[in-house]
Length: 480
Image (tube, rainbow, N blue to C red):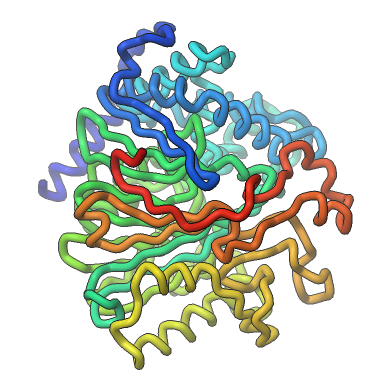
């Protein structure tokens, strides 16, 4: 499909988003559940969903009702609670209804309606604005000031969500550095263990239109958010968030709309870049690592709001760690990328060290080495091999609170995922580990004994993983 035609398709789908959706409550024996299933292993929940948009949504809401309930309650308690600035969920719903809903595609609206119907069939009293707001967590920030001004809200200026502590470590490599010339890609997600401790769902979605796709997320979300995604066309994607990026285009398309569309309908790196940069609203600015299993090409797209930086190669290594490297995105960031004891700087230095080693020792990187990367505990600031907030496998709970280091907090890398192009093309396979990629558990009672100031996160701050030990698990499409 040509560039012009692709953009036209997206534009038409956005225009068609005014479609009226008829919602009905299904029964447990509903034929809408045909072909769908859920299974669990080593801390992960795997769900297979298939069919038309409403059917996929219904299966989603029905099979993941418990996860939706837990994840939403944890999110409300940690990120939207009265402890910080009052119960603001009504604002999330209102912002989503006013500014985000009109920009969804018709298919997305129908799928959300299906989630509501499936969740209600299991007894959850959710409506589409709850589901929409939950999907819009990364976009709400972009529209907050406009909402506050139009509502005449008494707050002065912008109210951030300071407890959302996101981050990631990721890499992608291809060509002479890998054992077979395959693309190898890996990612671990960083966030607070209480607020994000239920994002352990692997979605295998086989839609009527577009590509079959696999993504990590939580119940209720039609996109990843954790941003580990790939599809049957061989498009392989992950990202790490760019810090200090607060430039927004309120007329733009929300991040979750662009990401979901890109992975469902994109087949190449060019497709992904074109869709993600199309009328970008600037929310959740990321460095996207993109691979095309068909060609072996990899790419870094550092995407701000109005600017971006691109690196592409058929033979190379790219590491990512919440660190703005490109001149263009640095122009939109308030982050000081020159401070060597910060997490992003230290981890970027470690990626550069690993890259240099494997450039002079080629042909070694495979999924097993990728697991080692994500489990790495070298602190480039201290020179030690002790887990911290500056290591690729992040353990923010291990910090010492000695300046200039960060304070101890229940946050860090809570998963690991690795795959390669041959796995994706043959059976849409991946390796995943729930909990710290290194396998070390987080024990909530031990942490709270030392840091009782975090007891307010109970009961959602739990051991990670709940059952220990867990190992890396191999998933494929139709995994049972």
